[in-house]
Image (cartoon, rainbow over all chains, first blue to last red; front, side):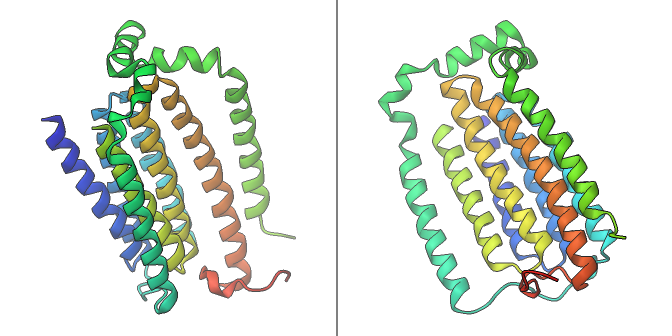
Length: 174
Length: 97
């Protein structure tokens, strides 16, 4: 069942991603992106990352995509339907190189689970035990507020800087 | 499911990179960068199933940085649009205005 659901979500994510790249209208691309993000949230659930799936839908598909939509509407690009993909030699080279890259990566990754290095780590059973002991949110929150506290605070400062910077950049210059 | 998720992540990353290379609309280029960040998030989550919960923490940080990057980048796009009246990346060809 989980395998079938995984392939359904994976197909939706890939189709959405291709839609993002090929759609002519910016709003259409954005809607395809929301579909991709939602199906990736489904894959997160299948991989036992329930909290991240919720965050993915709320923050990414909710907040960040709405920010993009605001900018598209603000700049009045909603009916910009002319095709803007680059044609010619460069696009073919990009397609070929990236296709080869995808092939190499897929070949490398398809044997990943058999790699002996995974014996050194807790594995799915260990992670499941941690999740059932501390809960789905607790398993993330406890290391976040102990071992990674400095990184957490720095990310807070980064968000503040980004907020001030965005206001300063988008403000009309006098 | 680990191998399949990693392959999916590689394919999504490559599609995002292709979008960055062949699209001219700056907002779509940005959207494709978000797609690439998400592909990396997917491989973090898939590997965290095997290597411990820390991978999910890093997804958290990546999402925060992506949000900050989207806010600043879209502000830059708005400010550039005020000057050039377009968001096509090929029209941004002067270092100073």
